[in-house]
Amino acid sequence: MNSFSRIITLLRKEKGITQKQAAADLGISQALLSHYEKGLRECGLDFLIKLCDYYNVSSDYILGRSPDRSGAVLTVDDLEGAETVKDSHYSGSVLPAMNKRLISSSLNVVYDMLGKAGNKELTTKVSDYLMLSVYRMFRKLYQSEKKNSQSMFNISTSVFEGYTLSALEKTNADINMLLSDKNLAKAKGDAFEMTGESIVSDYPKHATGLLNTVKTAEDLIK
Image (cartoon, rainbow, N blue to C red):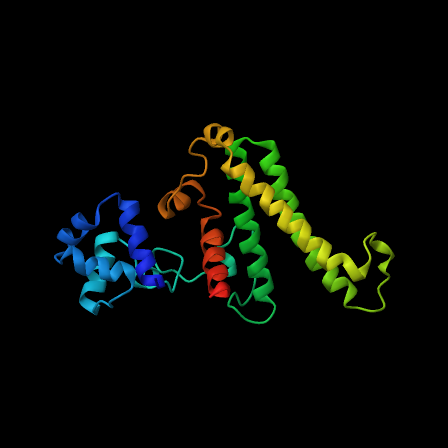
């Protein structure tokens, strides 16, 4: 399944309609729409425009080129709390500032979701996972400079990498276990239920950062 097929499938599900209904509205057979949603066939330009109008999104969004439904291009100035930058394009020293803001915006949404779930243990485990990740990256940078004293750390250089990865895996397993717990599922209710539209509506200051983080991460994975 490519970006286009995944996005049109999600858009249909967000709209709460069946494949049969969407196909009828779009004037094609259900079989053809199924092929589009599975990535087995590519649609023409005319049908792409029809899809954009039907789901009220831009062509850049539906093709996976922009995480913003309007197709807007993100700059540093668009992010919550961004400092004034003379040239806010992806160049020079602006990219690190952009990435920092993207991650910060995303964490605001993550912690708000955790707050709604109201489970202290889950919040602690997620925090542990993030802290371990930051520790690992900081130490890698720190010890790459041979002049830096290793006395700052209690865990020896020879084993820190393996120990940290092991701790990350264990913490991740703990998080998965908590999320699968029936009592937590009952307690959190619909705290984690959302759509692309609800994210934009519920988190107007942070949605752009989160959606761009999702797209960037998936680009890295691919």
